[in-house]
Length: 200
Image 1 (cartoon, one colour):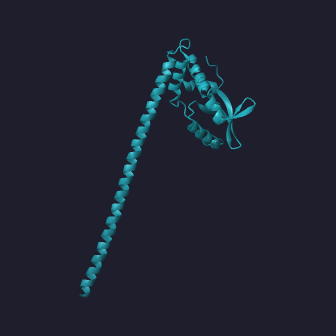
Image 2 (cartoon, rainbow, N blue to C red; image 1 turned 120 degrees about the horizontal axis):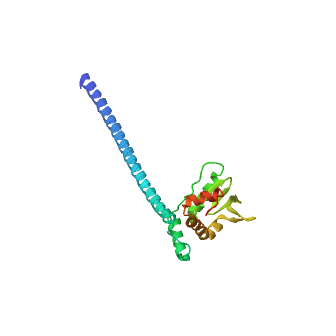
């Protein structure tokens, strides 16, 4: 083989290797971009689905609140079973969800959040100040004592995972009773309880 032919083959081989590398590089960029766009599209779809879910939940709650605000329920004519049915309809919607917030109580609230999910607690638990929380209709202290979540009741403490499940239905009834008598929403009732306002 002549020197010119050998040089030509060397250059041609280098060009082919370069083209193959470029092809692989461009193919990878294309694949990565395709995956990114598909993930973005999926994210948008998930967001839309979440928006629709939250909108549906809001509409259900709004209609339910209007149901009471219109004075539809008469406490004098409703039976205990019917009252409990109304409680189930309202609180099965998780009307005021609890979410741990960054701050001094974050570790405490993460544990509260975990217990709420574990115990299927649907009554409102709302931070008031310090370690004081509105639990349904009463402001109480929640503390972690000896690695156990405790609720201050009277002069002592009761385990969180005993106190709330044992009083869950009673608290539901008390809140619903406030809603019916005041003809206001659950949020209004909870705000009134937090701020010590008189509920009609």
